[in-house]
Length: 537
Image (cartoon, rainbow, N blue to C red; front, top):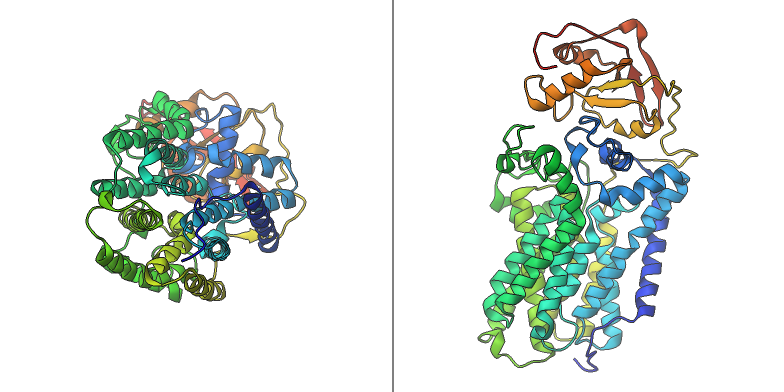
């Protein structure tokens, strides 16, 4: 391949152009699909930030169900946009922010094309970026409040790849930076642990073949710790102070907080029955639109099938070509290219394995979907003779992917004058205690109710029991409250009458009234306290 591009760098102008185009595309997509109304947003994305900023995280009790205590940091921009800007502005701005991912994929692709002629490097980067930001999950996330925290993962991979020179020259700094990015991603959202484990395992596997020292791995670990503290340290410290579990209520089988049962909560509904079958068959099932069990809603995704067909062949060819230890290879573009191929390929494979064994939830695989174009670029680079051939095949894959992809829809409605359209008049001096019931995502209503109100949820995906510590705290709140007590639910709370009775509360049917949002009809009924003999209050 002639006309080598020695640095693989991206100028500021080039990065700005890509960022602008990606942001415009994201904003237009958000305008096209409408206002986001996903389940998690209505359950905790809005409430958790509101509770944090208003100091009620530990005053209320589980109003957003088990997700009440997840780190709200990533959702702050969405919260501010939804509550303080017109819906159209909020939606389009949120979509435009996704353009950062497109720019990062472009930068990563350009670095990996360092040995390509300049024109071919840009064409390849274009196809890689389009493949990455047009996937079924990525498109479904554009303009939504979902917080998979993709930019730090992509930034970590940019740090770990080589744009110029020999890899060992700046290992310590680059590994520290990569660790910081992944640590931050995990601190903000624990499901990103999949990618931290994937890169860590990759580094351990290639350690014997590259020239970084134990100090470099120490720098990577230190960066991971620093990043986690930056992204989740404050929140984890608050959870530890209140519950003696820094990720409460998750992993309580390890931390054994007295406030919850000593179990490690895990949603097993998405895990495959057979790991080996899923590992090999999932990519082709997604190609055909067989979306269960990894996703509750339909999608059709061809990118993983292309990777499943090309990556194993590229790995086999790379193994055949491997000569001895990488430490004895001459410095140069080919050595650099080989290292980057192995790093990215093994990261992809190991992350996929960890995802499949730990979660199996399609949207937690978002980073790998966005990286499919990168892996295809590197695989084709092992299999084809020239950059031009790579660019042509990537172009064909891009067109096929665009034509075949069908994105998941997590819920959208047309843009109107108000995001939620909640109309509810109540005396702000009443100091009402709302007892929330049911498993529906309803806590988004809380920022629109009086600041003097307080909220306790006794029936949810984390039901409270009067004999357990959190249930006893709920009892104390109920029996020490001075002011009206009312239910708050979507639909009548009659089906939760028995659970309310367990907390000494009885519904007064004649006092029920309703109010609406754009999405739900809420019911609220007066509750009467009965003498409680459980001894917990």
